[in-house]
Length: 193
Image (tube, rainbow, N blue to C red; front, side):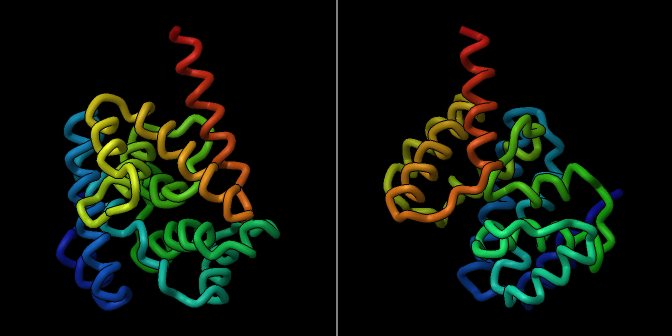
């Protein structure tokens, strides 16, 4: 199935603030480039990047409705963290409202914030693209961009360590999928040693 990038861009332009819209375009471009580099489907990567934050600025109660309508359960941790909710509701919205049934794209959107154990190539591409997009300017973003050019796993491990440390220093909840993602990548790296 071919995805209409222009149509999706129009949809997100209406749903997102200008900075978030620009971020989505930048993530789509970064995802395309990473997909090209690592052998993932470039069209799917661009589409997932474009749509990954489609629910980011939506009210939490509407996000919950989409998630439940999509047949997912919401844990207490997820209900307390809108950052996690938007990845779940984003995948649900794309399935329900946009008719996207491609599990690669939906899975990439669904786990672009937390990660998860045993991520697919496309999921890793989107997760990493969200961290290195051109609009990002957090400390160490240049290190993250450099690592992304050498290894998705190294880039993800670096970003996961950064995220876990940042969340714990702020006494914020850490989703178990994030910890599982970290452990999964580290296990695979250690097996290769």
